[in-house]
Figure 1 (cartoon, one colour):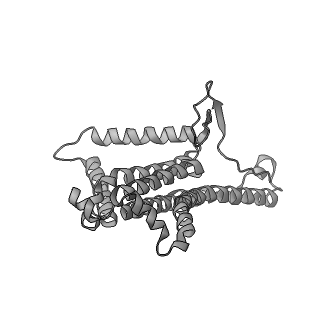
Figure 2 (cartoon, rainbow, N blue to C red):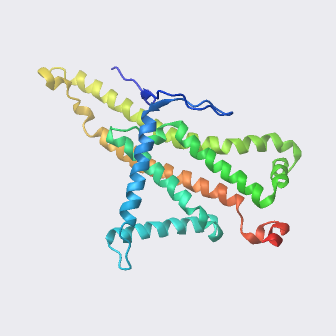
Figure 3 (cartoon, rainbow, N blue to C red):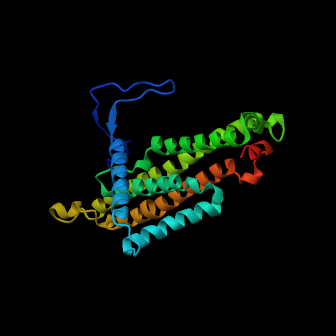
Length: 264
């Protein structure tokens, strides 16, 4: 059995160099993930245009479904983060839909799942962490934010710093690991069943001996779990963690420091 599990393929290299930043070096490579991200973006824009094209006072079936989903999103954000944080609902919805479509797009065999690339989930986790830090500093002050690393006692400072860094790392690796691991496990099982099928049915004449009878239906069944169920769960978990972390940095106005309330 010759089975290989590789990362995203490189389609081509741009004829010009991308500018480097002080943090990381940009690569001028167009990979499967790059194309998949572009496809997901086009799909999301197309869905938005289709749904919003004909908005009427007497909505049709599509508009009713869209309004129901939007209401559910805002209800979830309000229940998790509070009514004062409804402004984050579009961001949460974008992350959730990008994750779902990015995972499902891998089932087409034309694209690679965007969430099976660590750089994608890491980017989402970094953006979320940036929002958490920004709102903590904005709402409580830079000094209070730094002081929080020394609580409950000063000796806990290193552990608090590690914990703060571990949050985005765990978010990124959890989502990436489940999707990528599912793809690898599916490939391994399919390869093993194909090899067993060739061995057991080697007595059949001609091309019939090469048909993977034992693997029939297995990829589809595994896809239902890893791509649909697990993909949905991971998108929901990532979105919930985002709401919890950002919501913790944006408490209700009455819980903000006195000076902050006086300015308002």
